[in-house]
Amino acid sequence: MSGEPELRGRAARLARLFPAGPRRAARTPFVLLVVLLLGGGLIGLLVLNSALSEGSFKMDDLQKDTKSLTDEEQALQRDIDSYSAPDALQRRARELGMVPGGDPAFLSPDGAVKGVPSPAGLSSARDAPVAVRPPEVIGAGAPAPPAPGDTPNAATPTTDGR
Image (cartoon, rainbow, N blue to C red; front, side, top):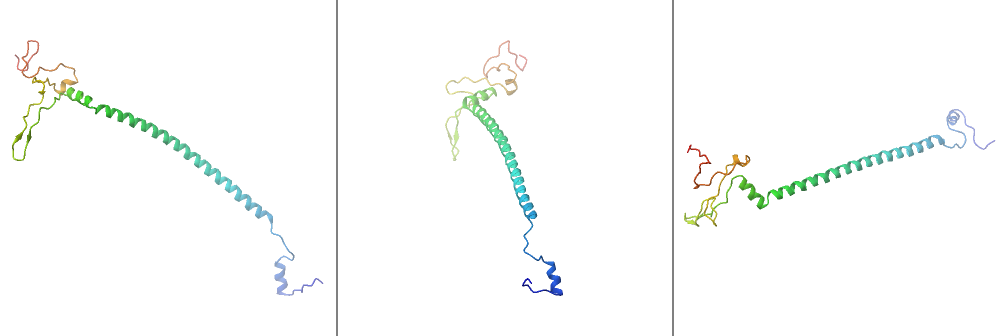
């Protein structure tokens, strides 16, 4: 005999449900699990790599857009700087018919006038009036009207029909 007691009845029926000898676990499920984990990891790395590549392409496009917009901003800032230069402002003001202001006068809180005012259009170096053109004729290229105090000649018509 084998040295193990014989089982009878209910114990024998339960003993038949369990394997009699030492049994090894099946390799197929374990190998299948390992293959699935490795395949899933490789697919995950592939998806991650493609997502990073797409992000890199988007970043390159955005950097190019940023560079072109920065260049455009700098060009516009140069235009603004050139238009706001004092000589450009003076030239544009003259084109619009503006004249330099005269000497200012100031009022003190007690009502006294400080300074001697002069009318606009008269420069302090010379007392001749400056010819002022209305804004409507600036763009038309018409000649400037005669300055105040000038006598109209026969070639220049006046508004009163003389």
